Amino acid sequence: MSHEILLGVTGGVAAYKSAALASQLVQAGHGVSVVMTDSATEFIGPATFRALTGRGVATQSFPPHSHPLGPHIELARQADLMVIAPATANTLAKAAHGIADDLLSTLLLSFEGPVLMAPAMNCEMWAKPAVQRNVAQLAEDGIHFVGPDEGWLSCREKGAGRMSEPAAIATAIEKLLGE
Image (tube, rainbow, N blue to C red):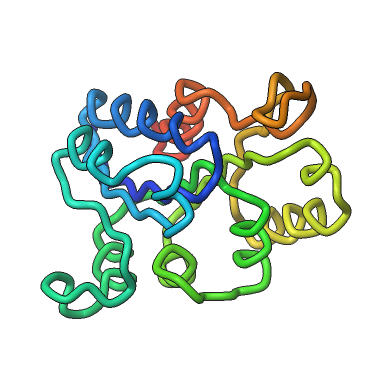
């Protein structure tokens, strides 16, 4: 069964894995709309996601020529599920506190369906009490999580904080969609 999935990509090294996730979801027959934070575009280009999804990539809260109601409204209304991968410490903190200062965080507040987050960050960051409080708050609010996993991190250390592999995220998505 085909579903509409919003893929939020934030500014972490693991953003490259989100391209593989987008490709897997499209190959499974889903429609995928990608929303990128400014920081995400420093790690991977929107052109990659346009090619993989066959759709434009939303990066602006107020695009000049599309989404007359605002992308945070229109994209939220058309999607069945929202996934944020990678979900950085900054994104977790903003989501836990209801901060809406960019397109992705505003869209998250507008979206009424299930949300899946795939955290990714340095192991020291993941272990911080503030990050763990934010994750606990989000879980209490009904957000679903996959990972993070343990393994080699871009900071050249091994530990918890590695974003789950795209196949594991896709499996979690299918479970949330009831497939």
